[in-house]
Image (cartoon, rainbow, N blue to C red; front, top):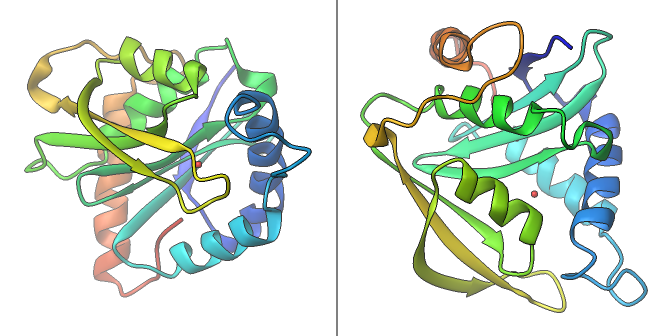
Length: 195
């Protein structure tokens, strides 16, 4: 399977939301009881629209050979802000590839990266730990009812862990190309942005 990473656009939102919704229902069933707290599609769509207009946010989608959106990865400053892949890709190596590609887009001066993940998201936490992230001890509650706990992870870029990218190109090379294109785009005055 060949994957491609590109900047997210508003046209990606219907397909992205479909995959995000399905992934959240399956992957976060222990965090959000869907009978009491169903996935807030409209609220999440509105958040994406706002974030796509925020120049401090760099939002990407990963697509398959057929151009279909298979996942998303978003960063802001030193934070991995949102990350997810469609359930049908779970176990394919896409999440590791997407992770490495996104990390390569962070500016070179950003040494310490951080993210927040639901404490009850065992699948997500196992992935991040496998990819070299460690708990910081930080906790907070999400704004989404029933307000489950989020835990903070960090990762040092100089940790020297080898990328686990599986795809047509090494994620580091792809990430540098994307970062160069993003810098060109931002310098041109475009709008950028976009769990």
